[in-house]
Length: 287
Image 1: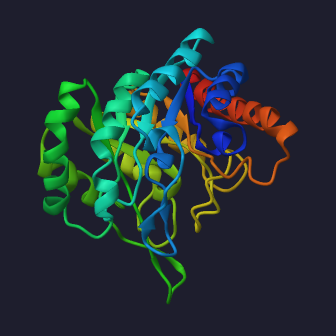
Image 2 (image 1 turned 45 degrees about the vertical axis):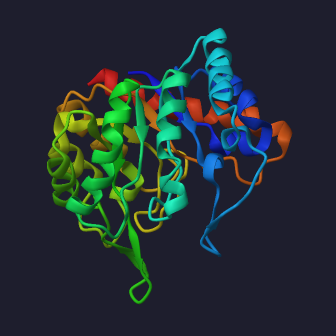
């Protein structure tokens, strides 16, 4: 089993170029191209922010190509990517094809694109049908992900697109194309209020599950913590992945692990992430 991690949380401290280098040096096999800076969303005001990031500029493909070069020179590849969200924002929707282009340029084979949390499988299918011909031209599969809303009255997660196995399977069936696959966010699946579990969802998705986001939580909040630090039972998770003969990477999305760290401790934090991913991978390989 090969391991990977998102680079957004590292890039916040050192930029994407060094982030890819740190991921390689830590012992990961691959990197997950986080493209949130392509269309940075202001959640408070519901609009995009203007930035000077290369992914927002005309040379975005050159930037993706350079990251690929850094990775390959240091012995790792880009296995997958993550497009900006929320897709309910029309301006962000306009960047989804750019995300697919950058994925291909970086060498990734899967681009994770969220569904609209509050749309039906049929409504979300329209967005994916629009994108799939472009994705196929670039040799990139689209992976949609299990989402969540929040019930303020009860103070726990509430159903959203793909948030349980039935909704996820309904979304895949509505599109019915091998280029639309599943990315299961393990932490989202374990949140109180969604009436499912990562184990249930893995077993239901079967071979349609081709990517994962691995992180830990307290079985209530979306903590995005390093695996083995909170309450998710990763023995069950890994056994379920083995049971379906999961063929993808073990990709971490433990993007809070580096929060608050001084710059001189970032590399050590990335190594801790790599060690946790390898522990999961070794457990999978031992079964």
